[in-house]
Amino acid sequence: MTSRRPPAEPAATFPVHALSADTWPAFEALALRHNGVWNGCWCTWFHSRELLRPGESGREFKQRLVKERKAHAALVFDGEGPDAEAIGWAEYGPPDELPRIYHRKEIEARDEPAPDYRITCFFVDRRYRRKGVAAVALDGVVRLVAEAGGRVLESYPRDTNGARMSASFLYNATRSMFERAGFSYIAPKGQFNCIMRLTVPGARRARSRGSNR
Image 1 (cartoon, one colour):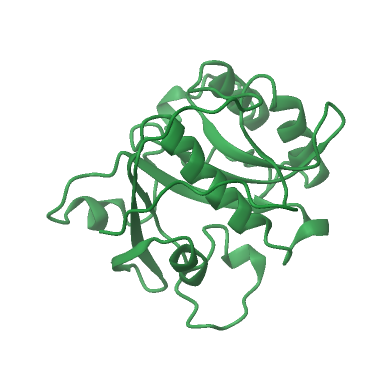
Image 2: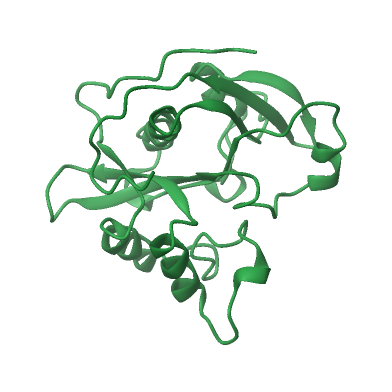
């Protein structure tokens, strides 16, 4: 399995910080600019429904999980400082934090240990699409996982075979993007996606705005 050193923040790129109570307002503003994202999902689809309280909205549910440190994401910003806007994210977490993945039985039937972390979705502000924001978010996840001690990171990108596709089909990004980030192809997943993994070595924890690990 591929292993690599956690990436340094590239020069002249967008900064990345962990989703936390401190960065929640920026995440919230990004979601509100896009109608709560995916019909009001608020990036809660992959969380367990058992944690949802009666009458709780998607927005309230996500905010509570963030406050309880039961939700993780690499949040991409356009600049630094209190007024910097969040422009994208990559959601990740341990499997028990994000259990509602597609083809779960197929994945769990495989004869290999479960990953320590999985990446479930990406979202990019419509004004910043096709500018490499998703790739920056992916590098951010790898860095945050490294700072938390590393180990096996898994995701399920779309295998597009080089074809351009609508962003609505690419919420889990593309195989080619993950390959460029050093992930290894493991197996197909469903009709259009695949399982990819990266073994992330641990790293000395760096200070990060809103770090929640």
